Amino acid sequence: MPREIIYTEKAPKPIGPYSQAIKAGNFLFIAGQIPIDPETGELVKGDIKEQTRRVLENIKAILEAAGYSLEDVVKVTVYLKNMDDFAAMNEVYSEYFGESKPARAAIEVSRLPKDVLVEIEAIAYKE
Image 1 (cartoon, rainbow, N blue to C red):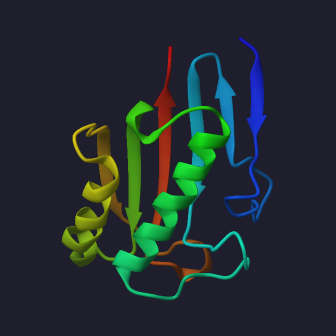
Image 2: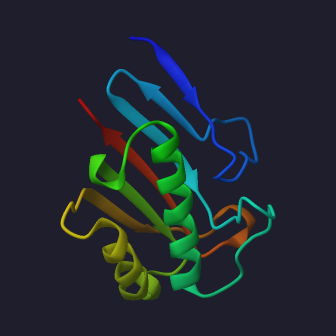
């Protein structure tokens, strides 16, 4: 199965040895995204809602660069610094995924890159 590296300037440049996303067959695997503004390269320092919105905008940009949309997302993993932020994160998350509701796991972790509040990775599928 051929692999294609997906990259867009509309999402943050990788901060390590990884790709924004890899397309393999009909699947798109999006690397964990943190709340970095792609225009400035700076972290969004706001609350969990602001950080979640930035992360999901980054994911949306990567999806679009590969010819996918949020409706094509089949699995999401959300990493939270604090599970007390779950409800607020979910409010913003629901705005983006609405009725498509991909399978999802939400996990509290002890630390995330650059000490952000949230990191999200996604898998999309399109025929």
